[in-house]
Length: 193
Picture 1: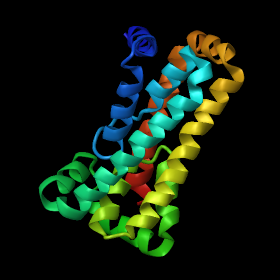
Picture 2: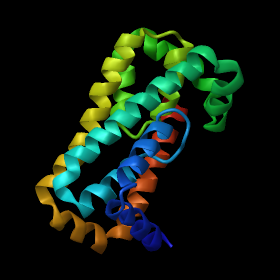
Picture 3: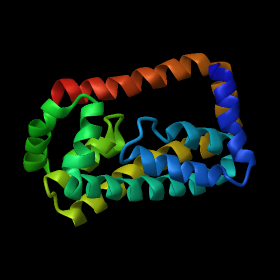
């Protein structure tokens, strides 16, 4: 099943809708959706390595706009929408701790969440809810998300078909590793934040 899903995702690179799908996935992941855009970014970049940086830019733009949407949800719609999203991820009881992180580390909290597997959407929503400086939020989000996505693009651009062969050969292990990292991100934020 995972192999078919992988093939289906790779198929987007051969259609005119691959870039739009990546943009929309990155946008929704930054504000509410649980699946990170890295999966589609990798699939698209592996299928056409010379477009890796273009895909990273599209992913960064979608993620940044989605982050602003998450900020808006926290700032204006926390009670009606934001709390439900935070509750979905089981982090309602950690909101005070996240607020303390913002007060103590400010931009660093956003930057770490934007670059690592820690669920970025939780930090975008909470940034709006805690009225974090919007300019600092946007600049830090842009830097951390771009660093994450352009690192992936650079590796794929650099190694190109070798990476595709590696992914094809070790797909099951890589898929399991990715899921473990995703779950670890949620566990880290639930445990330590």
